[in-house]
Image (cartoon, rainbow, N blue to C red):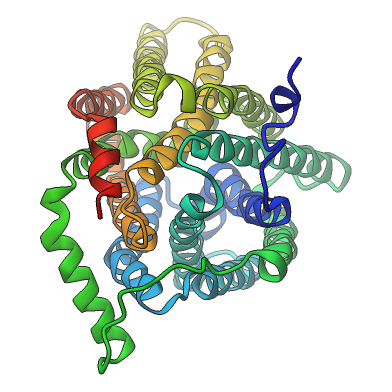
Length: 440
């Protein structure tokens, strides 16, 4: 077996740079897993809001507000970072901000809705905009025919860290009697500390890319950022395939954001205990690690577009599977049948979810890197972040459809968004897009 199959970064230069970049991917797992996916949405509903009639909508509005803030500021922040060479400064600043505010979530008391909102919104904003800056380093760390491998391997390391976090979380719940939501505050503090510790290697060893920059002299930082952003927006029509990819990301990103956002609440709704919920997410995480194998080993060989299309089919099946299960569960309840509807189909669907989650996220990030014009990586990933954050805002209308029409109907609508993203991706010509970007 080739050494590269066992260690995908084998033979690549700047190993310390690569691992310091991966370390930030590992750091943010504590927030995306413990806070956004697993525990905080349940804590927010059960301990903070304490009103089943409106908890989904308030949580979705809170989450959506942080995403709207990120969406509005991502392109400008990316333009400023490219203008003045501040990608590392913004990346580390976002990490520190997220870690501190995440620790503060552990001090929220029952009924303190406004405090919860005022702490969560900046934490999620910092986490989300940090993802953009982290991704913008990828084109400078890997050759164009290696971005899929590096992105996929980093994603796999992040999922391995997530699995370790799940083991610690489940162990803490069982050994320290923390199974009820009001006892989860120490876990939130731990999540923040994890984030702060793992950004230290990034701070110490990840270098700001030494690239020529088109500086606008005589303008302050904000004005120069707006000028640079305006120039990029005027030229976006030249990068047709990149524009199509960003639009497609908006549609299928909606599917990913909503499923991740509501996964724990759906499992809780269908009768999972808190320990079962942690195990369920652990299964999803293991599947996610397996899902990263394809972009790590084969995406650069078979093509970015083909990889993304394959994973979109997996996501479409996942959304339809969730919708079908929700419909059958409701029909079972309405029929008056004895006992609960079996949960084993959720475990199968969860494996599909995990496989698609790890693979599509990594493949999409590498695809954008492949089509990004040199010296405009932060701007490109700022626009990428804009699309992903706008897609996350769709959690609020999803929650509204779910509350007013029902879970099956909301999930069918979700599948429609994923299908739209798949259709748009069919029109992308990655070779043409790459050639146009590198003709800059």
